[in-house]
Image (tube, rainbow, N blue to C red; front, side, top):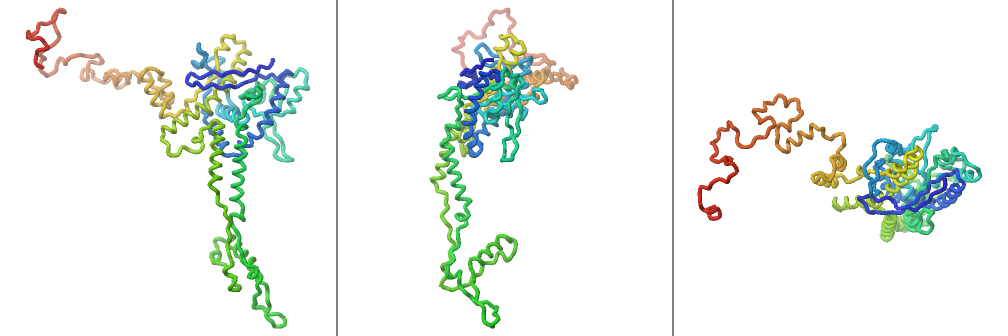
Length: 524
């Protein structure tokens, strides 16, 4: 199969006018042309993704921002949808081959959530990934997105040395890297027929090179990393944190008499090393905090003129305000470069709940949903339509379906619940859609009898309000009403006075007025 590399505009959601350019390549690694392409882009991808992965693993704010967005993307529900006349996803397909293929779109490492989270992370860090089928014992158990750094270049080189590669040819995927000089590498086998293609965000300079957001933030990430390491060095340096004791040399080497006498019956003089004595006392206090003796002060004796010279010197290790401000500025610039709302990472503070909803909605609309749409587009071209063509489906059926997503589980329920109620009252949304947006499980949907009883309560009809209830059969409807039949006017057995007026008995002719005075001249 010849390689197809097309820079394509993804299908726009009818509720979102955000458009983004992505690219994909359906790769058949059994052909020399595709194998050469894979070797070229794989070498560049391995080189360019080294630093982004280092920032992702080494800078907590970057890791949190991207992992948080990935968790939001993990709420996605995937399904096969029918395209409408405008080319937008319309009604979901719940039966047939399309629905069966859509149900298989999940990762063996955690289902649909793991598939979406991994794709989101890879499109943010190296900005490219490879789609594969995963087999176990020869049986397909799911799909996965592979980082360029996981693929073994040696196995790709073997593809180029082979003539007429069999679809069962193995490409090696490293799942556990070598830990040390004697460490072991764990690899996974990928059959050539299960290597489906590549998805990436094209660079403005070279169309087949991925454009990583973290690469554009390399300088800011480097500065933040250096600043953080500098702050760490200040905090963990024992000399800077604990300071030093200054003992005058004259006091440290002073000579004092002891109680011991030598063989000549003379008093023995020995050096009194004050520093060693203080160190021993400090170690005892640190190693025996529960000993009552550890609470006693340290006693030192020596010449009186040197006592005032003993000082505890603590260097200035205060974290300068400029350093902290620079660190916050770098974090903001990095997050904005990743299309992430800084408030989502650092907190909203005293903002109102309306502002919090706006920030969360913007995070999904700008940062998460575009990635999910590109994922669905890739799954449509590489999995759904490819498998439908392989199954012999007609082109008209293949080209009018797609994989699409549902993100309602990640929406802010409070805000959308009110919108759903308003739309339901105006007949703009189905009952199923209203329950979905308000967070009510479909298992709690009313039955047909409950709908009838709800209508009865609304129109104050006791017969409809008790429709289908077993106890309703024991009700004497002559005592409570007409048994469901509406009756206008007073009851026949009413004890009230007979009304003086009633319906006209004339055959359509207007009744005679009791007064000849025009109506507008009559008193009110």
